[in-house]
Amino acid sequence: MAGNNISGEELIEQANYMKSLIDSLNSRIASLSATLSEANQTLSFLKDNESDNSKQLRIMIGSGIYADATIKKDKFIVPVGSGVFIEEERERTIKRLSENLKDLNDSINRLNQQKKELENNYNMLLMQIQELDNNVRQS
Image 1 (spheres, rainbow, N blue to C red):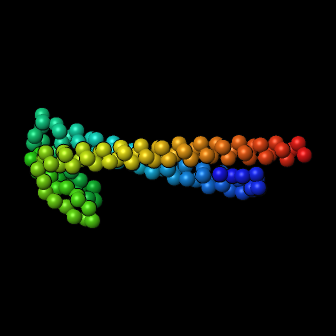
Image 2 (spheres, helix red, strand yellow):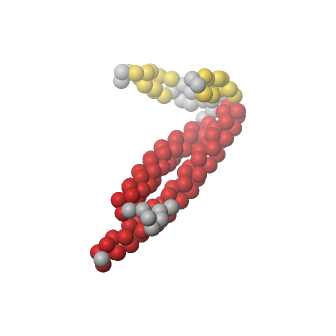
Image 3 (spheres, rainbow, N blue to C red):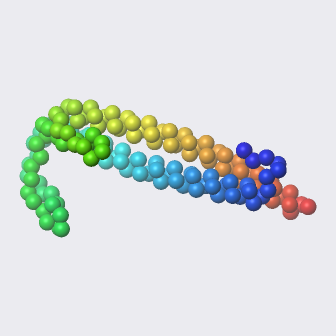
């Protein structure tokens, strides 16, 4: 990290850079957390055996126009990457989404660990800056 030969300006630059990294991680964590929440809601819907086929509902088809629709919960169209979608059975979709949820949780945990390490380094830099400032004031 920062040594005694680093100027106060360089320490401040490093601290500002670390702060921007922490802010970036916070943004990524928030985005993944929102995705996780949506995926959990979707999984709950898929697992809900009470309403295997929904009653009629309204969906927006665009430009503020709605259409009546029903959802059949035996097969779903699922994205598999690169704009490719497949039709699969409900149980396979539940399994796929559960795996995705695990991956999302793992990613959030890794990002939180990185954030914690950066915050520790950032706080150490702030202490070095404060110490340097105190030394300059005493001179």
